[in-house]
Length: 104
Image (cartoon, rainbow, N blue to C red; front, side, top):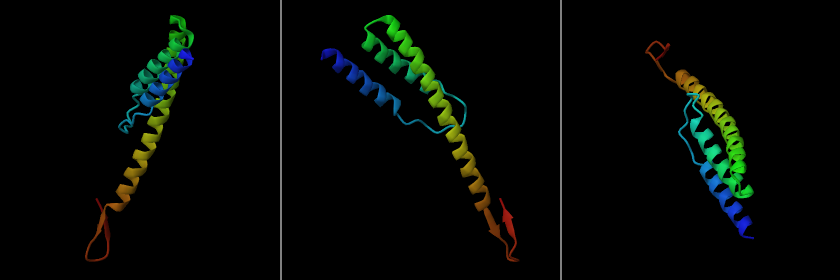
């Protein structure tokens, strides 16, 4: 029962660290997600197997998963940024006294 409690606590910590909100940036940087994934994977793998090999395998797997999550977040951020800027460009205009639209 003690072992299961440790694994459950490690999973809660890993999920808590993985759900930390980050600043939306379309810069291609996935280092934060990779590091969080590798750390939580190593923690869970080490506690589940009670060995350094399990921690290493968990760290590598967690790093790969975190990296793919980071790439997915960057794609979503880039889409959101492009959508916002295209709406903003269309909305930025004024109408002169002759009824002509002039865009900024």
